[in-house]
Image 1 (tube, rainbow, N blue to C red):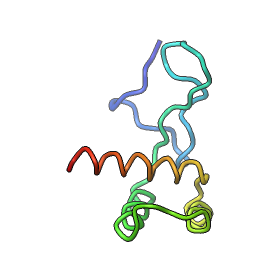
Image 2: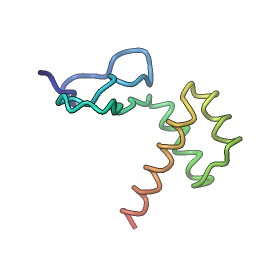
Image 3: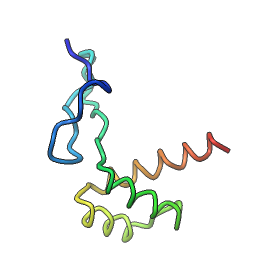
Image 4: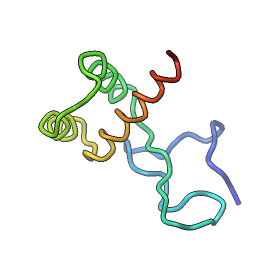
Amino acid sequence: EQAWGAEQPPPEGGPECLGAEEPGGRGGGRRLRTAFSAEQLSTLESSFQRQRYLGAAERRRLASRMGLSEVQIKTWFQNRRMKLKRQL
């Protein structure tokens, strides 16, 4: 069974989920990591520098502008805040 790793690039076509379940066959329907493009990461980082918490309207605006779901935007911001917390 093949696991996703650095040796294999993400599928073409943008930020889609790489599969429906986590590798290893444990099930649970857990999504794999989203492969954000460099442009998407740049946009997300610049938004994060302006404000660490997004309101619903700003999250909707970013999601539609970037072609991502609101949940992906929300999760990215949560993860980025935790990363900042660990660094401090």
